[in-house]
Length: 178
Image (cartoon, rainbow, N blue to C red; front, side, top):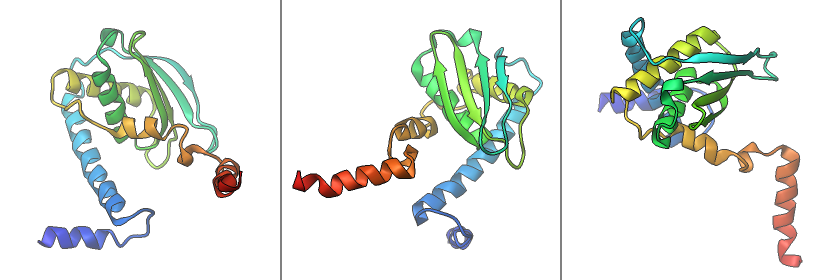
């Protein structure tokens, strides 16, 4: 019971979203810590080979960094593994604005905004390699959904500019009169 009260006290900090969204954020913080601990355990061990083949640096807070990686051993892996990899990367990196993959070519593209604790491309390579190893060894489940949430938002109201949203709102308002 004390744990629940402590959780609700933490919810008092200024943030956006409903109570459930705030609880979800607190849970993600704990999941991020746990994933970080798991990655530290496999650090230095032989992980899945990952090669960075493109890096465009971040331009302030207006243009995220673009990183493209190749995972040759994952060529042709089932989509569920790629979805899990993307989900865990979003959790680990925290500031991912977009992530995409091509399982046939075994490549992954990440748009990332470095904020408080920026990760270097080499660190991100290590994170990808560690997560891929943990997924291969079944230490991480493959039912993770963060990537699915981002892909579902593509083209949705949350991705639209204010002008586009206003236009659609006006269409909906005047649609009965047409």
